[in-house]
Image 1: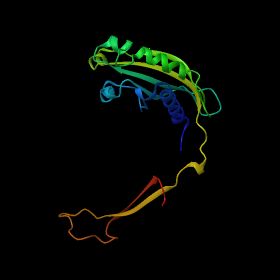
Image 2: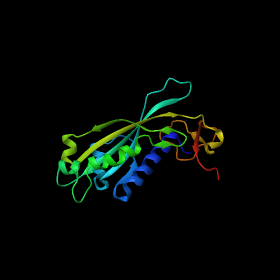
Image 3: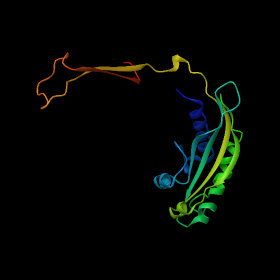
Image 4: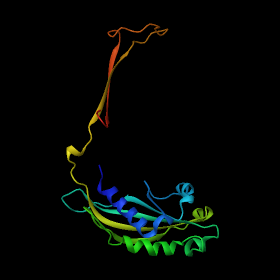
Length: 198
């Protein structure tokens, strides 16, 4: 079942791919970039990565927030920091990539959600990133996002696992034969998992 959050993420990724084509990686991340995360994604640069970062609650009667989506521009270039910003004959630069993507996302209408609005652009340069040969910029977009009341029909059936476990009384040495059901305490364990009942 889709949610407003992944609906917005999917819309952003689709727009980035439409603007940039296959020359730029585009996907979602579970959290903001760290140096460790960037190390694993250097081969995906130049890349545009979107993260839902939360947002403050709005003063309404519904469960609604002013949702923030961070769009990260990750760049690497062996020729150095200037080439990562400005680009060269082999790779697009961060400034050009942002000039292509940011205007296309500002006021982007997402069906059943609303329109994204650009809130700010951050330069996340640091010595640690520079040592990794990576530059990182982030454009933050906001949109009011409501959490609709779920319809029980939209929730998948649950599977239930039930087990009765017989715990034998303490003995020294431990008994070698199975204990009778009434010789110790019985523990009941029940686990419910969401999934297909078939």
